[in-house]
Length: 179
Length: 175
Image (cartoon, rainbow over all chains, first blue to last red):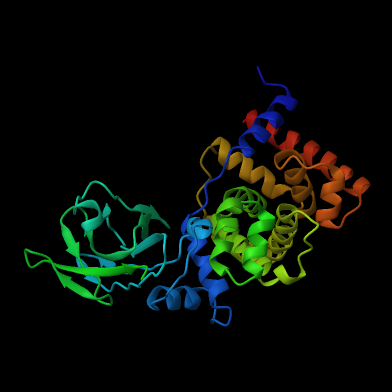
């Protein structure tokens, strides 16, 4: 038995009305473009934004806007890892977005003194078919050390951010919020 | 915080506040762009362009109007532009008759594939009117303001779109 034509169309409309979740990194791309309107195309603008340290002033009302603080850019391909970029945020209240490009990674976690270097407390979300990982979290004013943990074992600091050594000599990076 | 309040803050120089509007409208507008264009990457490109154009046009935005419909109108225009470019790209592929002959037979489509295929068979104007009416749940007056088309023309497009979609979907259901 075939369902009535009307039912088929209604079923289609019902499916089309389901919410669609777009790539959350689209926000960062948009903000990069509106912050650098003279850039040479989307990729160039995004790349410039990823590489360039930026200072943001955030009010509590605009905290949700997530001052686009870039913490890391890395390539993970066939066992080889390269490049991370980072930046510094300045705000009274800041939501800091960490972005990490990790082609081929199965998991990426943000670890730092803000989560007691716990590999399970701040997993990063994959986007763009797993090429880009991101997480945003509120950080109090101050100086924070952090690093990225790829696939649960590969520890990467941010070579373009200020470096720090932890008590065990493991390299990490520094992001400064406020002040 | 209302849209109007955020717009006021952005106009006063708080660029970061614009991200609140992006986050607020991203998924709803993204749904329309994805269904209109049938391709996620094209949809994301059109959506980004719409947000950037909206940001750069905020000085011309009328405070008395609602930001959501104003932004939606920009997206509809971006989708038209992207759709025309995509159509040219697809025509280039279709001319490769040898590849078409050698292409494997398509598998039995899933429901989402069927929907995308059926929407893709509609003329862009009909697809646009159908999505705005039945998915975005707009009334005809709002659609007319947004698209620039007349109400009677829009009603006709929606009616024909529904007829075509019913025929297409029923045909697939019987396979």
